Amino acid sequence: MAQYNLGVAYFNGGGTPQDYLQAYKWMKLASAQGNEHAKKSISIVEQQMTAEQIDEAQKLSREFVPQQPKELNPFILRNNVVNPQH
Image (cartoon, rainbow, N blue to C red; front, side, top):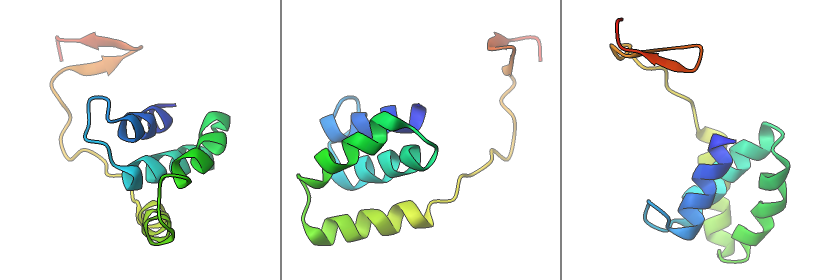
């Protein structure tokens, strides 16, 4: 759901600069995870894009590799609660 929400933020320019390439990428990734809202929203994003932009956004989504943090934050999340004692 977070990937879809990020895509919506990029599409609307809410809290981020409006960026249809990034919106498409994040919605495509969410769609691959089974998010039905993302699957339906991709066509709406595509309507705002040129064919070249769609090609570039597809490339971005194919090449995306999630990064693992190198170091854990001292506030480790345990059971969905921030534990400041670690």
